[in-house]
Image 1 (spheres, rainbow, N blue to C red):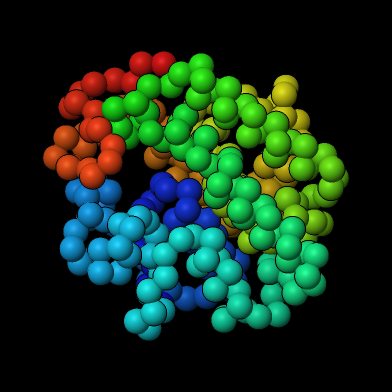
Image 2 (cartoon, rainbow, N blue to C red; image 1 turned 120 degrees about the vertical axis):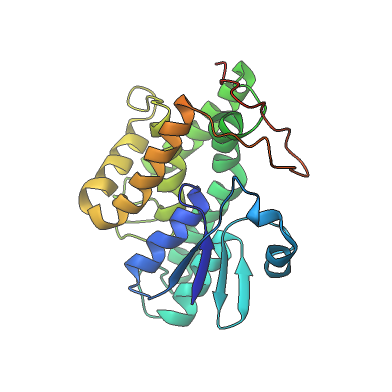
Length: 236
């Protein structure tokens, strides 16, 4: 099994955490984002969306990190509590995965990641949208009152949410005052699962470094995002 992934991208880190938790051996094929290796024709054959990560399971190519997380459990660990079989428990896991994919991470990505890697700025509107998404997450955690995002057991839903919130920690975004339940869950995960957290922690360190010194991507021709000029700093 091979995983084509970057070292700091939340979707890549979430899949790597699942592989570690499930004790599944794999080869990590590093994708150089700065050199636009994800935009090459060879990569496009694996994933026409040209996004990261991609799983190669003996010639079976699968993209979209949520789908990868579900596939890993269903094929390689069908009895694992990381993806419970009870319909309501699984529905809650699936909801949290969808919530992060469609609602929370897009706002985090737009506010944290896009201004670091591309020619975007952080705006008051972006902050408002981010806070709205975080408020919803806070409400879900308060409603369940559980240790993890989908119950009192660790599930694959925790991995992408941890790696999303990790981005906020990388830019020193304070959760403690307005989102205490999010902060408690996030801190608890780090304390209880240090071997999993260290995977995300290394990515967070890279993002924090890029926050201070944005990478030079002037050689990349991206089909969607405008590239920041070489040496240009992020203006908050």
